[in-house]
Length: 508
Image 1 (cartoon, one colour):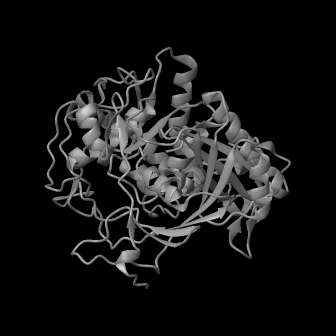
Image 2: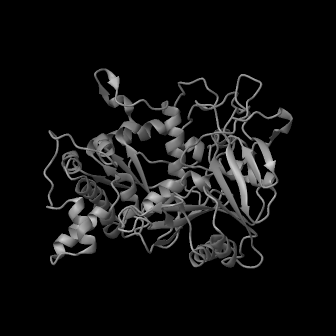
Image 3: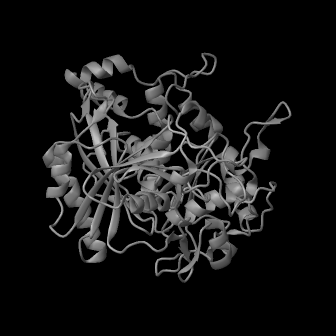
């Protein structure tokens, strides 16, 4: 714990967001209320939803759509809990009550499958039910879909996750005579029977319904939003006189789900204002390949973000990037160079020129080999800077008032390192929208040269382009916020190895 003289503490101005026709506001909900979403040629006038779920899920979905097309009052007096005026009133686009495509799946079919005793077979087969129907529509039907709204029963959420177990009284017999141990053995010593080898392959898929479904549909470029039935209509699920789940108030749920749906349907809710031109930010993504025999095997990826919040995910090679000694991931020179080249190429496709500055964000300090590779992968005119961002629990600053430090407060250790409070008291809200005393982010310039104050300002801005929610800000920049989730999807299947770069909306 560290106490500093308050004269050492500086404060960044709250980054502004741009809405409508370049009007500005610091709070996303204010900007959407006053000016509407960012106007551009890709803004949808109506979003085409493909519904996939049970008949009951469809009924709940249609009831929820009727609700979000009308104003919804907030049940909280907090300043960040604002009434929801209705989808079209906010986004200037229609959300039709009837989906553009409707796929009904019998609930009994889902229940019997997710209850299979062998968890690998259960989750893989349950995902197949949804995946096969979506693929069939894409291949056979003419109706275009912007976003697949996959509404799942609570049992799929409960039993479709790692470590889930089916009670013996509910367990269904496994359809295949296979288990994880035998499947692992067959990965190195294949069977003479192709059927056994094919069955063993499904044990290389992650035990997570959400991640596996998204990963298996990446090649089809299907944009998916997985929603629990209980999220849409929590009042319909009551046990012993109590709700099954405690959620945010309906207005907050509407703000969050509608914002991400608009973004995934190719709309742009907002973007960062006052950003230097020619700058792009990259978050490094690493995830161990749990299905590999080699304990050091890991997948590397990168998330590239622009001021608009647009993102592209690049999948790097799988290799021995993990060190069991240091517990860290590092790339060799050549692999880092390839990722840098892919990022520059993607930026050039959109802008016609390479970026002026490329900031690489990671949770650990990159190695000299990685740095040399990144430098070698960009043209001479592109400046590269590597930034390490980590959560700091031992360094604390305290406010003399009853509330935490103001968000944006920072303390500089020296010209290459500082502590930034990306969470804290927000004057616009008159409160700190959190529960625990906030900890700062430790921000360090590992390689390259940059103004540390500008680096901190950029990171503070990047906490405000998470379109998965409609909050004032996140505690992490978007370059790192979804790193773990993207990594899990990149490694959720053994078949997602050679995919081209895809927009970020396919992963969240």
